[in-house]
Amino acid sequence: MSRWTFINRKKESAAFGRYVDSLRIKIPSQEQLAKNLSGGNQQKVVLAKWLQANCELVVFDEPTRGVDVGAKYEIYQIMNELAEQGKAVVMISSELPEAIGMADRLLIMRDGRIVGEITDPRNTTQADILKLAVGA
Image (cartoon, rainbow, N blue to C red; front, side, top):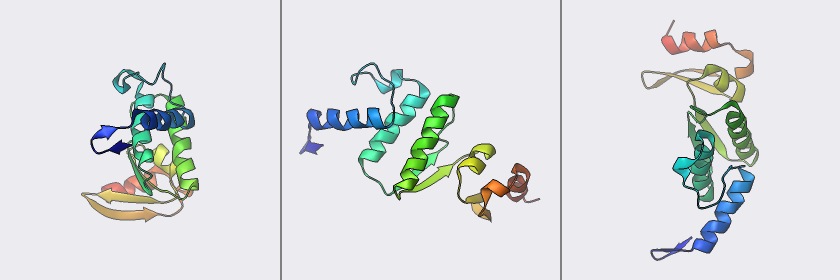
Protein backbone atom coordinates (compact mmCIF):
# COMPACT_ATOMS: atom_id res chain seq x y z
CA MET A 1 0.00 0.00 0.00
CA SER A 2 2.98 2.22 -0.06
CA ARG A 3 5.58 3.20 -2.51
CA TRP A 4 8.80 4.43 -1.07
CA THR A 5 7.57 6.16 2.08
CA PHE A 6 4.19 7.35 0.79
CA ILE A 7 0.99 5.49 1.61
CA ASN A 8 -1.53 5.12 -1.20
CA ARG A 9 -4.61 6.38 0.68
CA LYS A 10 -6.99 5.16 -2.02
CA LYS A 11 -5.71 1.56 -1.74
CA GLU A 12 -5.67 1.81 2.03
CA SER A 13 -9.27 3.04 2.14
CA ALA A 14 -10.48 0.35 -0.27
CA ALA A 15 -8.78 -2.44 1.69
CA PHE A 16 -10.10 -1.17 5.00
CA GLY A 17 -13.59 -0.90 3.51
CA ARG A 18 -13.45 -4.58 2.55
CA TYR A 19 -12.49 -5.53 6.11
CA VAL A 20 -15.18 -3.29 7.61
CA ASP A 21 -17.68 -5.35 5.63
CA SER A 22 -16.17 -8.83 5.99
CA LEU A 23 -15.31 -8.48 9.71
CA ARG A 24 -18.47 -6.52 10.46
CA ILE A 25 -16.56 -3.67 12.10
CA LYS A 26 -19.05 -1.16 13.45
CA ILE A 27 -17.78 2.37 12.78
CA PRO A 28 -19.51 5.65 11.96
CA SER A 29 -16.89 6.42 9.28
CA GLN A 30 -13.46 5.26 8.15
CA GLU A 31 -11.95 8.33 9.79
CA GLN A 32 -13.01 7.08 13.23
CA LEU A 33 -9.99 6.45 15.47
CA ALA A 34 -9.68 2.84 16.65
CA LYS A 35 -9.11 3.96 20.24
CA ASN A 36 -12.68 5.34 20.27
CA LEU A 37 -14.26 2.03 19.23
CA SER A 38 -15.66 -0.70 21.47
CA GLY A 39 -13.24 -3.40 22.60
CA GLY A 40 -14.61 -5.93 20.12
CA ASN A 41 -14.31 -3.53 17.21
CA GLN A 42 -10.78 -2.58 18.27
CA GLN A 43 -9.90 -6.30 18.18
CA LYS A 44 -11.34 -6.54 14.67
CA VAL A 45 -9.31 -3.54 13.46
CA VAL A 46 -6.12 -5.19 14.74
CA LEU A 47 -7.15 -8.42 13.04
CA ALA A 48 -7.79 -6.56 9.77
CA LYS A 49 -4.21 -5.27 9.82
CA TRP A 50 -2.85 -8.81 10.10
CA LEU A 51 -5.24 -10.26 7.55
CA GLN A 52 -4.14 -7.61 5.06
CA ALA A 53 -0.66 -9.12 5.33
CA ASN A 54 -2.20 -12.43 4.14
CA CYS A 55 -0.57 -14.48 6.88
CA GLU A 56 -0.79 -18.27 6.75
CA LEU A 57 -0.60 -18.47 10.55
CA VAL A 58 -2.67 -16.24 12.81
CA VAL A 59 -2.07 -16.29 16.57
CA PHE A 60 -4.92 -15.08 18.78
CA ASP A 61 -3.73 -14.31 22.31
CA GLU A 62 -6.76 -13.97 24.60
CA PRO A 63 -8.84 -12.71 21.64
CA THR A 64 -12.07 -12.26 23.56
CA ARG A 65 -10.80 -10.77 26.80
CA GLY A 66 -12.81 -7.69 27.67
CA VAL A 67 -15.31 -7.92 24.81
CA ASP A 68 -19.07 -8.46 25.00
CA VAL A 69 -20.83 -11.71 24.14
CA GLY A 70 -21.85 -10.54 20.65
CA ALA A 71 -18.28 -9.56 19.77
CA LYS A 72 -17.01 -12.90 21.14
CA TYR A 73 -19.32 -14.75 18.79
CA GLU A 74 -18.14 -12.67 15.82
CA ILE A 75 -14.48 -13.26 16.71
CA TYR A 76 -15.16 -17.01 16.92
CA GLN A 77 -16.80 -16.90 13.49
CA ILE A 78 -13.76 -15.11 12.04
CA MET A 79 -11.41 -17.69 13.54
CA ASN A 80 -13.50 -20.53 12.08
CA GLU A 81 -13.59 -18.84 8.65
CA LEU A 82 -9.80 -18.50 8.67
CA ALA A 83 -9.44 -22.20 9.51
CA GLU A 84 -11.85 -23.08 6.68
CA GLN A 85 -9.63 -21.06 4.31
CA GLY A 86 -6.71 -23.29 5.27
CA LYS A 87 -5.01 -20.78 7.57
CA ALA A 88 -3.37 -22.10 10.72
CA VAL A 89 -5.11 -20.63 13.75
CA VAL A 90 -3.49 -20.74 17.18
CA MET A 91 -5.57 -19.49 20.08
CA ILE A 92 -4.06 -18.83 23.49
CA SER A 93 -6.80 -18.69 26.08
CA SER A 94 -7.04 -18.94 29.84
CA GLU A 95 -10.82 -19.39 29.56
CA LEU A 96 -11.27 -23.16 29.61
CA PRO A 97 -14.84 -23.26 28.20
CA GLU A 98 -13.67 -21.09 25.31
CA ALA A 99 -10.66 -23.32 24.63
CA ILE A 100 -12.75 -26.50 24.79
CA GLY A 101 -15.40 -25.07 22.50
CA MET A 102 -13.08 -23.65 19.85
CA ALA A 103 -10.14 -26.03 19.66
CA ASP A 104 -9.51 -29.05 17.48
CA ARG A 105 -6.57 -29.88 19.74
CA LEU A 106 -5.40 -28.50 23.09
CA LEU A 107 -1.83 -28.24 24.29
CA ILE A 108 -1.55 -27.70 28.03
CA MET A 109 1.44 -25.78 29.34
CA ARG A 110 2.99 -25.45 32.78
CA ASP A 111 6.13 -23.46 33.56
CA GLY A 112 6.71 -22.78 29.86
CA ARG A 113 6.60 -26.45 28.85
CA ILE A 114 3.95 -28.53 27.15
CA VAL A 115 2.74 -31.02 29.76
CA GLY A 116 -0.20 -32.52 27.95
CA GLU A 117 -2.16 -32.80 24.74
CA ILE A 118 -5.87 -33.34 24.30
CA THR A 119 -6.79 -34.43 20.79
CA ASP A 120 -10.58 -34.49 21.34
CA PRO A 121 -11.41 -31.35 23.36
CA ARG A 122 -15.18 -31.76 23.07
CA ASN A 123 -14.97 -34.99 25.04
CA THR A 124 -12.89 -33.59 27.88
CA THR A 125 -13.70 -31.62 31.00
CA GLN A 126 -12.23 -28.56 32.62
CA ALA A 127 -11.11 -30.83 35.46
CA ASP A 128 -9.10 -32.96 33.00
CA ILE A 129 -7.33 -29.86 31.74
CA LEU A 130 -6.67 -28.50 35.22
CA LYS A 131 -5.12 -31.82 36.32
CA LEU A 132 -2.59 -31.52 33.50
CA ALA A 133 -2.03 -27.81 34.16
CA VAL A 134 -1.26 -28.17 37.86
CA GLY A 135 0.44 -31.55 37.66
CA ALA A 136 -2.04 -33.41 39.83
